[in-house]
Each structure stands twice: as structure tokens, then as C-alpha cells.
Image (cartoon, rainbow, N blue to C red; front, side, top):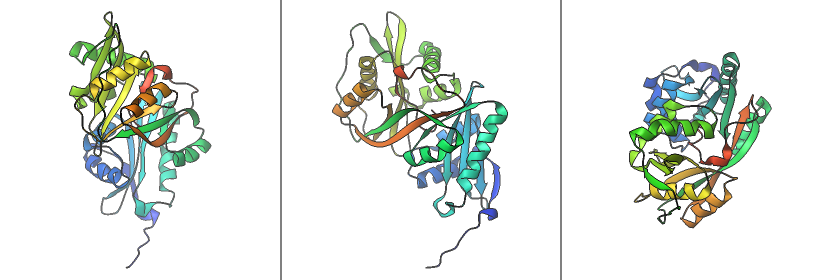
Length: 290
């Protein structure tokens, strides 16, 4: 077997465009990540993306920034193909993305793996809260009812209200992202109302490897449980959901429904000390979307 060392300077830099989405999903699939081609198109369309390409045009490294409301940019998809790792490419892309944040006057946010957390801390990122990814092959469905709370599928009238509640809980408006999630898996988009007022919602999207449930926002844990129970009615696995560590009661309920913890993350911020209302966040949209 012959091994070939590829020089970093043999790669060319360039912006990511929507036509790179299929190349991006191949790159994320190599890392066993869950994104679909539609996810990549969304992020490239609404964000700033940079890549590294071979001389034949093959995409081998990426990073993306998703600006939200001219206040914060979400850093995502820091990926390098295995044969090009340990050459400083990821660090160079990260520096480029953070320089762009500084130019735009935006704080930066991300969900880091344990290895990534060690990389990001020297760049000024601070921990906000821990997250745990739970996975289930086939949930044990048990309908949950909450007195005074009615559940129903997301309707056109609810869509704007969900965007507003997401902005309160996440911390900044991200209407394009929430609209995408509302339409991604409409059968599993559920809202909770009490006396005509929106008190929670659950959204989901198909993934390359698993259905991703989230974000889930609610006034309290019982409502979050009811929303997830309704959203997952009839669902077959695998299913993943990323839950803040401070929602221990909700995590325990997921465990009773057949979910198991598989991977930790840490939500981190650079340039701001707080974001949104984590007490009402029971599941996030995922590391790529915030």
C-alpha cells in the first residue's frame, strides 16, 4: 500500500455556495454527522461559508457562520476530511470565521464536543450550559396530558407565534431557520396552548442518520413531555434529541421512554455572557443551528 501526503498549500480557499451542498453532505457523512443536503443548502444560503478545495475541485474542509439578528453568529460545520487533518486547516478556517464575526460586530455561539471545547476556549469562548444527546431506536410511546393545556399540529396562524417564542427562548430571532424547521417534518410540528396562549412547541427534521427532534420550548417540564410524546406518536427510530443538562427531570422522562445518552456537548459563547431563556429550552435545534 502506498501512502500519499497531501500538502496543505496544495488546497485552494473559496466561499461555499449552494452548489457545494452535495459535496458538504459527503464530508459530514464521513464524520458520521446527521445533516442532509437540504440542511447544507439552508446553512449556505443564509450564512457565510468557507471551504478548502483540492486542485480538482473536491471539497475537503468547511466552516459556516449563521448570523442571527445582527447580534450573534452561530459557528457550525467545522469539518476537515480525514486525510487532510492535523495540517492546521481547521484552525485557519476557525480564525477566518471569528475574524468575520469581529468585522460584523457579532458575538459568536456554538455547541462544542469535549475535544472541540478545548480548542474553542483559547479563542475566548466561555461555557453557557452542558447538553446531552439522547438517542432511541424506537420510543415507548405514552401519551402525556397536562391539565389546561391543549396540543395540536402547527397551523399557519401558529407559525409566527412559534418564531416569536423561539426568539425569546433562544435569545435572538431566527425566522428563516424556524420556518425551515416548521416545514421539514410537518407531522411532528406540535404546539401547546393554554387559554389561547402559546406555551410551548416542538419541531423536528429528517436527518441522514436519524430524525432530529428539536427545538422544544415550553413553560415547564410536563408541557415539554406532552409535546414530545405527541410529536413522536407513531415514529420509528432512530431518533436523536439534544437536551440541556439543567433539564434533568425532562432527561429522566426521556430515559423512561427508551432514550439513552450518547454524546455530550457544551453550549459556548464568545463576546456575550448570556443568551435567551435556557429555563424554557428543553431541546435545541442541533449543533449546526443552535
